[in-house]
Length: 89
Image (cartoon, rainbow, N blue to C red; front, side, top):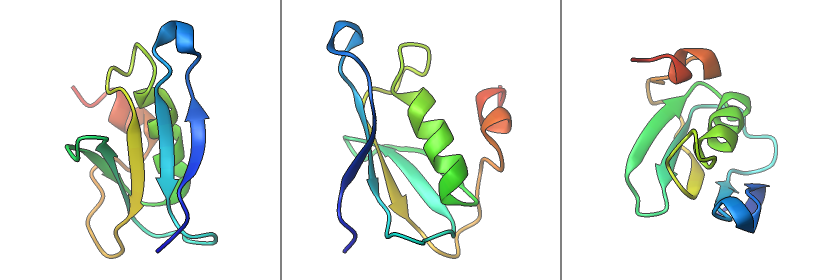
């Protein structure tokens, strides 16, 4: 099981939400981003895109509160890039 790492944190003044990674060092396959309640947010083709989305998701504009990135090899990603995820509507 990969070690949990905080990869982004909001200042306490705007909520103090965190983005936590549960991804192994060197992993570069599909990932999922979940709320801390376990609700599915999206899946990405790689860890780089997952980090971009998670960093935005914890902000007031992102609106998800704290999030977790997990490894999910072999699944079909929903969000191929940060921009596609952001403008998905």
